[in-house]
Image (tube, rainbow, N blue to C red; front, side, top):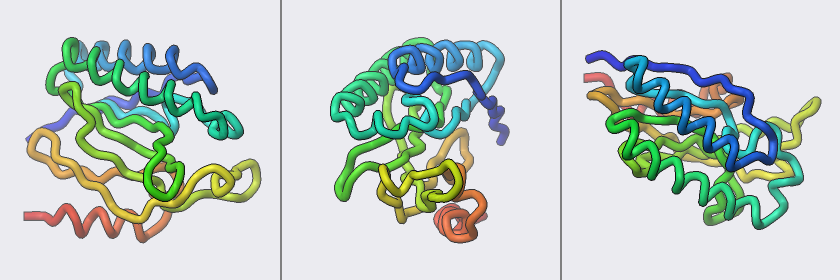
Length: 169
């Protein structure tokens, strides 16, 4: 099995949710044309990083949800079979989470909430987000892939949890 992964490290602008969604869609089409099976975008792609006090505005979440629906609709039509991993804030039980989500064929297929929220130097994520606590593994092209967001990759817990959920055959 092969899975060609493309990294989309683009200049996402803080607060430009609609423009950032358009960049995701364009990058998806370009990746599909280049033969990619999976495109990985940065943390908090849709809001730009760091969104800081924009996260306190309720209308921001409405814009994020609208952008996710647009990305799902557009990529279902233009990039069938391609999976996108992108970051966005998500309101759920317990508060606001910094999420990495997977979109494929017009649907959200997985979400992972960042567990380790940095609160040092220029980072103040505990002010805005609740920590996640559950590993997320999704299947794509016959592979089981674990999701992680930034700080979590440097911590043993989230990676070990994902590995336990994606056993080797």
